[in-house]
Length: 390
Image (cartoon, rainbow, N blue to C red):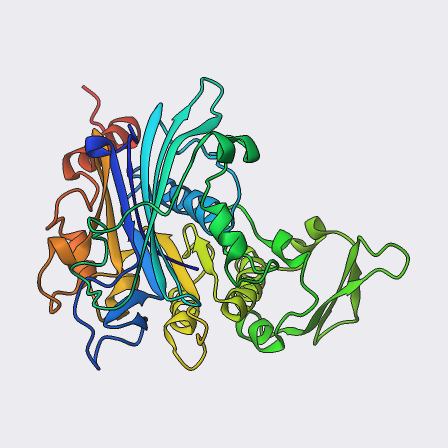
């Protein structure tokens, strides 16, 4: 099942209380700009890499949290939890557009929810529409005006499902999908070595790239207690080290190496299963070359054969200069309320250098306020600057 797009109404953090996220390419796909796209049917393409970029406190992490929640509920069949408290509001209308590649069907799930004082969700109404792909274009992809609901939430369905689970789970259970496939993985800026706990292989090439002084690093099962892992590490200049806990790894690895080992290992799994990897603040602890290497893996069609997706947030627009398109960049801004806009809808030219557009504040709200920046400098100068005694 492929997530194409979703719209949410009722989110009080956002302007007009509306949030939208679209994986479908808006601009035309050509031989020169389609490396990071996958054609799923007809002339409909989806992005394999998308970035949410913006300055501090504009909602980048919130956007990622919301997207992760939607994937969990409508692709993995889990219940709404809102553990990040990103869903600020009482009542929500959520429209989710999905594509089933096995059945060649497009679905619209129209959900209405309310949230209690203790942040518990309840689906109050749901209707599911579907259609085939014949004659579907980018223009009419989300048009279900000629379709009737094939499944609705009623008293019988509600009695069989917990209140915070979508009835779309019934269709998911019928579709041909692997029960072991994680539909998404959310890698936030605070997580690192914990992702290694479920892995037994770390690429030696990745290790050498991150830290050439490492001869090998292995994750092995403890022979006495299978629930525990043991790490075996050897630098070229020393003897093998045996480490029994994740917390000890930080004594031997830098933050960047530790995050890199975990993130590249996770990418291996995501690329294998064709899932979605959500990474908050991708550039943290990395130099620019490592970040670009990581992004390029998902852009390379010879590697990314299963339509895996990378969605990442960043403070640094210079990372986007390597992108050939504008429609795979989302601009997070805040002026009282937050907004999330597609760069292709704000900038109709591809010949501008993206980093210069952001840093010049050409679009508004993409660079720190100059007057506020100067006031900070003045406050430090007042405290620590040289002042003539009078």
